[in-house]
Figure (tube, rainbow, N blue to C red):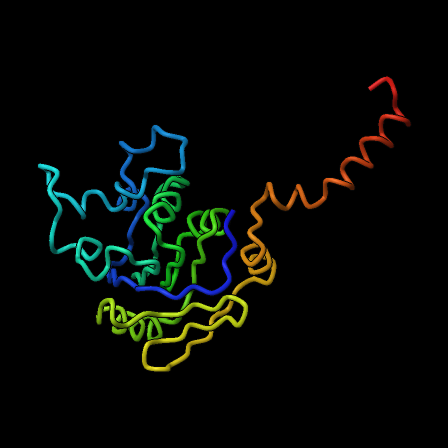
Length: 201
């Protein structure tokens, strides 16, 4: 998993409440177990018309936001089913950070397992960042995980909270598998000892 330290990038505003995982990545794209290639289907029903043409009014289709790395969203982002394809699609598109007043629990947890930083902030702070994001590509945000700060284009700064363990994992690029591999020596020593003490196993 890629490390998350400091991210400076364009933030796309998505002021929609209750964005569910089917909206993030519709069910017809869940057949794959590959994490790559899903970015083109992110927010599929919002980004494209029924004939497959881009919807020019959707934020990620606007020139200023085509390479957005941060998403400033509405309350209860990621609700609905528990599909892990939702953070996969965001990551494959290039979004590494989602900022919202609140997230659905399973989606929130899945983000950390896939290298995405979800940040919960009070509504008034989200509103300020939404205003910054609406200024387009000329107004980038910097998200500093180590300092737990979001710095705006005009020099403003917002602090955010994060669980220390989750912070450690993101800074070091550790998902559950990575955490297990950190203990390879201890696992090997235990298996050797267990084999000696219980050779019949």
